Length: 568
Image (tube, rainbow, N blue to C red):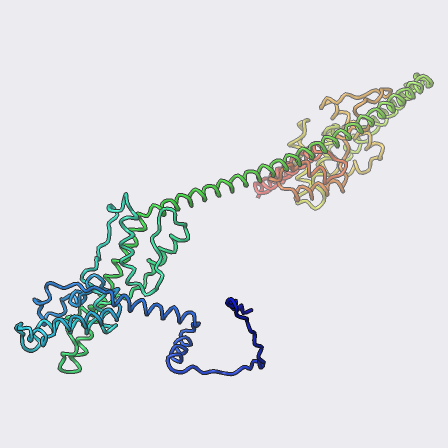
């Protein structure tokens, strides 16, 4: 909206409406200085506003050139043109106070001013004596402009600027005032960096990221400083190609050595600063404290985890203990119930037995038992007589056979079965060793007695075995019980120690002895479990009997063999 100024007093305002045509799009190409600005913006990928800033910068530089004040070099007229390499070119042009910060415009303006003032023609017109040729000090001004106007030569001279301080502060210098000592050193050495935006040293409040970025930059410092200006030989003065190559080789080696020394100097500077930096010490202490805190937190978490596991384990153990106690209590209750039932049954049996005793005639029972004993004794006497007769018919009636000898003979016949080498001699020898009667038996005596025993009546054999059993009980202190005695409360069944071993039980025992060798823990308990109906004591007793039998068998066989060898 366009606001027009109000009309003066006495005058009217006229508004004219004109017809405005529709806008059209057309392409316009810049020409002249506008075209030059357009090309610059396109090459730099900059906008028009950026170009305006560039123009302002150029105008500011031109204004600085106009305001530039040159410093007169007092030693200018005493300079030797032949020793131009050792002169300060900035001081010769009056730019000693600006030095490497001087722009090309300033260098050009300074050279122009020096020429106008020190040109030989000007001085000659003023009546000043002039040296002929290149011996005049004006040659130094020309040489200085030649070095500083060329960017390559100027960089070479800036690299060996005689006013630059190459010193590196020691660790002791920065002990108390680190930032005041190292800040200006890093500031002046940052001029050699190829990268712009060199990070600052900062202060005590700088963050870890800023400090880390600073030292990373300087430890990977990329320097453009080179030392070609200090070449002792100039290849342009060489007379041939080989000499020029030799000069180039010598110059490259010297430059590389100086570059290496420069990088070592920078590295020493950074190392000294890093070792003295109080922020690094602070960060290390913080890192250490952080690690200690993490370590403590880990240890605390681990301790809590172990405590939780221990609590869980204790809870599981407590639950298992309670369950076991509950189970044991149930077993105990069942055992008590079973005992009560057993007591009730025992009492009932006792009552029944008492009733039976009262109802039966004890005298009649005793009389019957006495008659049975007398009949058994008669049978035993008849069996003894028959045995003596059969022995007399065998041709050796002088040697009587006692009941012990008969039992020993039966045991030897079972111990040395058919198939044993020199069986009857072995049996005779066995009896002679173990007999208590002192009568020596021969193989013929043993054979004839064994045959006579085979012809005996089975009842007579039973009587012989019964007598042997009664004798065994007397020898081992077994007290016979009365027929009318009541069974004890502890053992109601038969006494298992004298139950004979069957063939099947013997096989199971032998197999268990092979399965569980001597070094097996709880061997006899496992062997007893393998033989049904037998206890640990029964198995051990049977094993000892078998061992004694085997030893006796071997001893008898060895005596027979020794006797046969002696006869031969």
